[in-house]
Image (cartoon, rainbow, N blue to C red):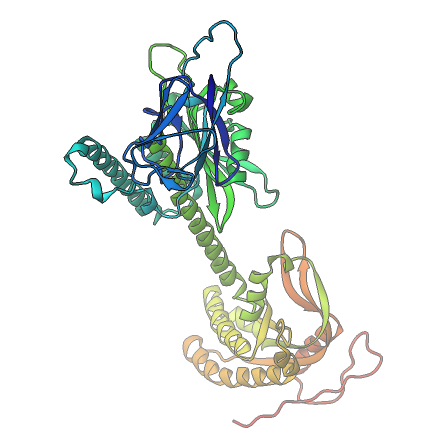
Length: 533
């Protein structure tokens, strides 16, 4: 009679069959000591065994920590196992299927199916503590289980080493933010704690979502030139879809590893997803090559390696998330520093919130324009040294810019010894827009008041005084980013801007008579701002 086990996972779509051809079929988590390999943190290394006696099957639990359940009842001792029964071990369901053979020549006994042909999945643990196996404390005092206890203690020791490695890797990642450094630290740890021969990292491109190779690392230095390789697509797609780490013990099986694995001579594979914010952003792939010399035993990954890689993938995912956050904050800091020299915080924040708004074009808006210029600067520059001129202008512009910002204004530009500022252009602030003209007038008053102190300071420092003229005008202008795609500036243009410049130029005259402006058919009225000291 032919018999086989139909095995399926209650998590995901994993399923496979195993033909029972031996008197004893061992089931457990260790690929080295079991016929049926089931990877689950709830399953012991040697979990249970099925005895075949003629056409009958008997199930026995091997003193596992979490037990075996047949039809919902925990197995104690040895129990008959029939086709009508459902065996549950961890997250796996096992059904027995038997088929009577036709009268024919005696069947040829098939060799035991190599557990290496199975694909096994393990969902990445949420935290490293989940890697620690459970122990049945009720068996600790039982002398008959001393050997089993030693095995479990040894397993605990190994898991403790895993936690130590993960802790060490986390400490290394604390001060690393560049992707190259993250992958270097990660690969160093992988080669140290697993038999992996090469490691490949693939990440999704932000624009296309396509996976591209970001790092290729080799254990052997002689292979370091082979950088243009990619992991088998079938394996990567399965890991990304299942969001689960995959252990493939025999990648030469075309139905499992695919053509790429066969061509590259891959023997054994572990591939784990890199997950950030609940979404897979890439994979961490390691493999061993098939031995071509015939003198060495091929290296094959085990369940401990799967545990390690899953934990390392989790740590790497957190490091990538931290790296993205760090880079984003650095870019924002640099952008804020660059834009903050000329733009008020409200506009800088708008740019950082919507980088796509940083493009050529503008909108029409009513705003108030302020021009200020140093009187008699040309003859003054002839009397002072160049470094003195720079020092004077820097002091002057620093004071004037601070005043403009304090009145919700935006510094448009510096022009030699003059400056241009806009009021009422702040995004989404209706009060600032409504009070633009008042804010500009108050800024002009404070600027002239500040000049009283600056004149005294400049006379003591350079032996010369300076005066400024200010022109203010309100009207509808076009405000936006103007220039080229390679260099642009946020500014305002239009007739009201030209009139403000003319008013500043005319401020040296004491008369308030209407002024003629090019392009205007009628003279423009002029008003003077009067304030009390």
